[in-house]
Amino acid sequence: MLHLTFLFENGEEFAGGGVGWPIRQLLPDISGRARSKLEKDIHDLAVTTGERVRISHVVNVIKLHVQNISQLAPVHHVLALWDGRGTVAAMSHDPLFLEALAERVGTPFWIYDASVLRKRIGQVKALTSPPKVQARFAMKACPATPVLKEMLKEDIWIDSVSGNEVLRALHAGYPQGKDPAKICFTADVFRDNAMEVVMNNDILPNVGSPNMIQQLADAGYQGPMSVRFNPGFGHGHVNACDTGGPSSKHGVWFEEAQAIAEKAKAVGLDVVMIHAHIGSGPQFQELHENLSRLANDFAAIVPVFPELTSVSLGGGIPHDYRDPNAEFPLEMLRDLFAKAQQELSAAAGREIHIEIEPGRFYVAPSATLVARVHDVKATQTNEKGEGATFCMIDAGFVDLLRPAMYGSYHHIEVVGKVDQPTEPIVIAGPLCESGDVFTRDDAELLEPRDLPRPVPGDLVTLHDGGAYCYAMASNYNSLGRAPQLWLGEDGTVTLMSRRETIEDILDLETEEPLSV
Ligand SMILES: Cc1ncc(COP(=O)(O)O)c(C=O)c1O
Image 1 (cartoon, helix red, strand yellow):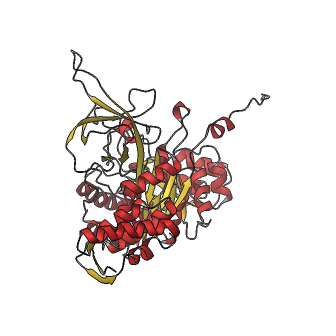
Image 2 (spheres, protein in one colour; image 1 turned 30 degrees about the horizontal axis):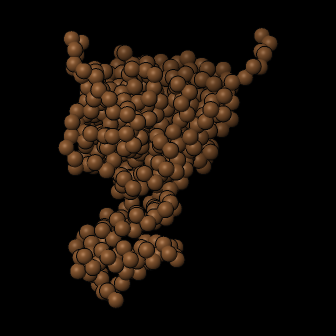
Image 3 (cartoon, helix red, strand yellow; image 1 turned 180 degrees about the vertical axis):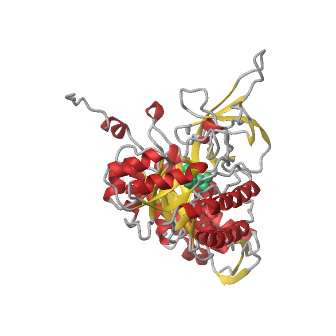
């Protein structure tokens, strides 16, 4: 009988267990011949290591005996805790785990990591900890129900931009009503059911023009409202995201504050909130400067709105896609919000609440797109340009649009080949569309990425896909939207949404005659 000592990654040791100990911890359900075989493999490992075995090696042996996801998830969970990481975050990057998921749901698929999301939610809670400072979630970034439920649990309110987004927030459990207005509706156009949903569910509208105020009044809306301003400055992460200035379509021009106040008064509506979203660009410092400037500018117009109770400084906390572990000095924002709350209250002569509504920051790092390599092929250099190696994967811009739309960077890994030599590779998708390439620069040119050479069958992961990714997915080329999976902090995996099928697509088509 062997007496094993298990060596943990954090330097701790556990002596005295037999070969059955790790099995009881990790695969308690295994029995019969399968269990005997596993015991023998751990026994052989122990013999070769003089009865002192690294727990990670034991786990590798155990993984070879795992047959399905429901067995694998607890293994990873316990391993993560044993490793001293205390979270299951590493699971969503584990080759075996991803392969098991791919076998189960096919590729491509999305995997969301609850622990990563919760960490970001905690950070936003910390920076909105000063009194009278409230965080919302700009749900357009990722409107999936489990994400909304996580927000609701932490009393993070919602900024929605369509009637259907309001309905999704209600579906996730958010309450109707304006006291407080846990759901706010921000838009420059009332499309589809928007007006009806706002009216029927007692939702606070945040409108972007004098005409929209008139539309509210014409629809019979009564009650408080909010006005979105274009402060004349600010921009998003690329030029196409123009959130403030003469070329931005959003909101009411700042100098028209008096006119908008009069318009609201004329139709009998109280402006209880003023709002602007200036975006950030990738630079934290720039966001900080822009937010300070915005708070100052708002202080000047606060007296124009006698019923005002809140000022929203919008979203725009950046995420560093090239270095997802980069830490921003978020405490600077906390101090800025606390100061703005005091200064705006002083300007109004009464207590004013501050709101913020980030989207990207909460969710960007929480999801990974997992795709399969189907082919690797090359073009050759000629008078038109340099040849390239193309790695053809089954995910395309129907799944992750940002690189095709903005030339955005997403970190890419060939699963299980982390430490291998690299070469320049273009990662391209399956769409009949030459722009279906994930490795492009912001001038829309190919930008091959240094990656280990993939082979057909490998899995590829595209990281930081939680914000504006599945939310922008389409079924172009009649490809169904990929399934989304949720990795809970307890290591369990849930299918959040299934793969869209041909039946789903055809279901929208009709031959219904319209009498006009
Ligand atoms: C009105 C409004 N608020 C908040 C956001 C969220 O911005 P971000 O995801 O950059 O934080 C947006 C993004 O487009 C927006 O338009």
